Image (tube, rainbow, N blue to C red; front, side):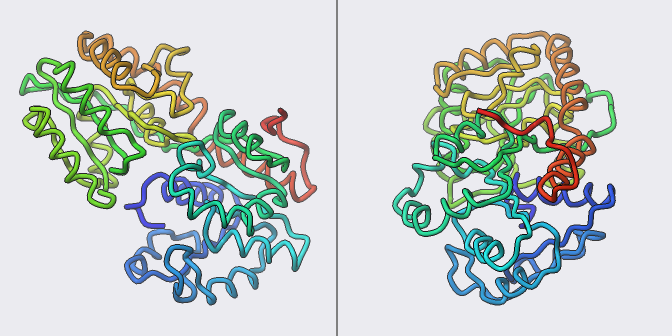
Length: 370
């Protein structure tokens, strides 16, 4: 629940803010972590609070947190993510009252995630996680692909397909490149799932003239050091820049100071950074590990198989294009982001889903029917 944790934080933070703007009261409850205590004020006017001390770190198991959740006077419990204490609490919530439970899985049952550290996840799946998700009033998926994946895990609960949202930045003229060097941007967590080794190999193969690759994001478990060693070994260290995590104005500036966005991921249920890049008028290269076929159908990017060969081909095509051509692709990206992913639209879809599970509204059109 820190900005440094990436997409899930961004999704929950902005969703609750826009729900509040639409008249829906949200209370955000989190297990207590000392390094996050100073972030409570940033959630206002949404009420966020910490409860209990985590006693089992990998599960974020906190007895005081359990008490706070189970005593909350809310109409709906909406949990985010799986494999940890909130899933077990959701089962208790449903056992003690008929109030509905909505579960956002956030890609944690996608094939790559399902097999990553499987030895830890399988016992939890059979002990409580499958029962928790199957008994939810509604599951939330961000794409048809994720919804199909939930069905493949044997889950029959209703599924609402609602994308993550983005705030649309003001349209500004992209600054001219004074150095003669153009910039491609990666912005996400530095994690093996994100496919950066594939991108570095593709970059070394293409070696685009007068281009640099800027890698922005928080480091996870020393992955940055591995990538820096790899870049040096490939002989491309001089055209790769590592910037660390950026937020707010600095993050927006990073989008505006490049001409191309790349996310070479192995697995995403959505890929919120892609939607953010589109909102900033950027063409995008990503892989079939993310559900972004729309990049190809709407001619605003490249959607390629997860491989060095495919990434290298897309990178070669993109970096050979005239800046005006990339700008036209970016303009189409912005139009799609405004129509499909702006937070006002997304929050409205969640409100319709909440009303439906409370039996106070019609079934939304985005309920997945296999």
